[in-house]
Length: 109
Length: 114
Image (cartoon, rainbow over all chains, first blue to last red; front, side, top):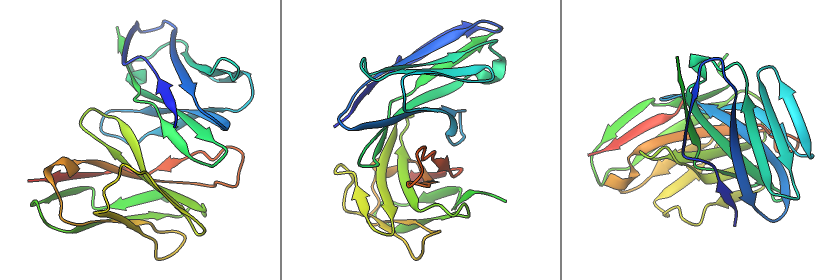
């Protein structure tokens, strides 16, 4: 099976930087995804990492260390609209993806 | 232009009834999924399906059954609905054969069992 751990809740200030961590244990790792989900809406894709290192996409970056079973999502220049749940999902070689329980981020003025 | 669509958006029904939720994707993807998101917002995979393989999460009761009339559709049929089935059900699709099989989610169906 797969174990995926993320903090349940985080709070940050508008304009600041926040890092959301995700640790996982799995066999046959084949990629890690981050999704954003606003309340009452469907999850939407943010980023994908399969090799170690940092992937940057505008204000959002995602990092992966396969040896440590660790990833983080970095959000810069936080905006109020970034208040949402952030879901870490791990895919295996068998094509199965498992989602973490999500981190609810609240951005305050 | 909707990539992944689901109907209905809201479904309120009595315990013991049988209901279906429909899902369609126009992305040409080869794999579709059903997820259940409960009141605690935990997103759990129920099924993944392509034209070769159905993968069932072992925790899903056999009252739930996916039905795929063709590659672009994966409907979810639920028999003998129970109170605990109340949740938001999301359909998703991806191109599993690609390196990054990003999943595209439908808008969700909020099921309430009374």
